[in-house]
Image 1: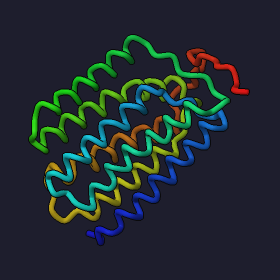
Image 2: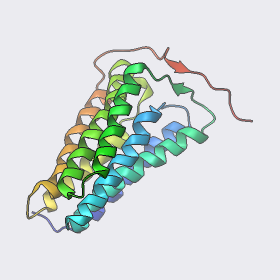
Image 3: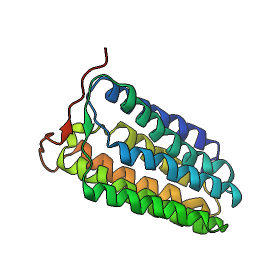
Image 4: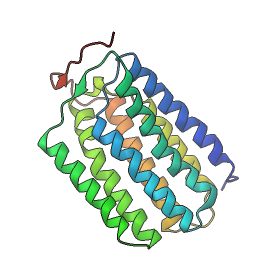
Length: 204
């Protein structure tokens, strides 16, 4: 195991990846699925609060940044003058609704591990629309944020000395999920169309 202060290095890598994604959004190279990024911002912040209640400590920094980074990206998608918005399907809305239900269920329990589990489920459901988009239209995505998050999670896991659900659940989930999305975007399986992007007039 490495010194837990390496978590700070992982945080820098994660923010750097998110900033690259933000730049791609601002320059019209990436069109994020706003529903996913909104819920990706909320669920980890719920988990961060639960991790603190379970005494996770410095390792919870990764979870905090996993929540902050999507909100940065969501903000960029709202202010950029270049891309349109990704049209939301009924399936996307259903995944979003189930994600919100998971967060609401967390509110009825004061058990930290239950909150972490529900926030994981909510985050995974929120990811489904972007996973579909990354598979169908990988050219509308940027792999930088996913790579940064995967590296940050890997570093966090290497610093953990006492493994339990509270300390490893989010790092393991983020590492697996981010690695999967990185591969999906960086090495696309199909060449898809972007006809589901609704154009938006540039801001004057």
